[in-house]
Length: 210
Image (cartoon, rainbow, N blue to C red):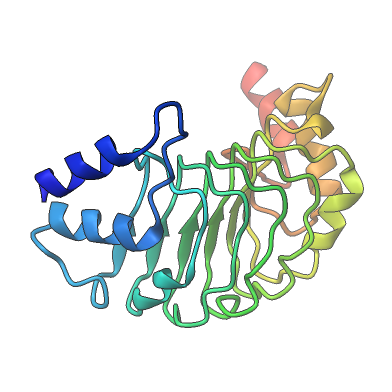
């Protein structure tokens, strides 16, 4: 296939931006790297750090019918799309992309347990209502600037672990100062920014100091 690739490279006009890797091509590359694994049967598929990067999620991802953990992190994806065929998806990783809003989760909401979206440009927490089984939400280094956004997560009955550090809501606060504010908006949360929340947190720290 190398002569084909060479021709393609030579054929592009000088100065033209490299087109991104499409999802079908990314899946093909992944399969070749994994002993020609069958994408329809794989439970873990990692399409990370493609060169050139993936710019769009597309329908070819629907062939990953058995996937439980799908990673598309470190690409240039600007939009989340619906993936109706992914009936087993538990972990979706889209960190380090260019996503501006959470969308397309209606079809995977019944199975999704973890959503990794750190290092994007997301400013609201809309779009998560379908994720009734979501346990873990990684949202660090985004653009959330209003504490009221967290109220939208109260409807997620199983949400236990959240990462929010690096958002504008934390401006001027240490992680320790921000933690009680997160708990105030999400009373059932168990882990904030990697720290366990215990009811007697302050007492325990005083006891240690004594």
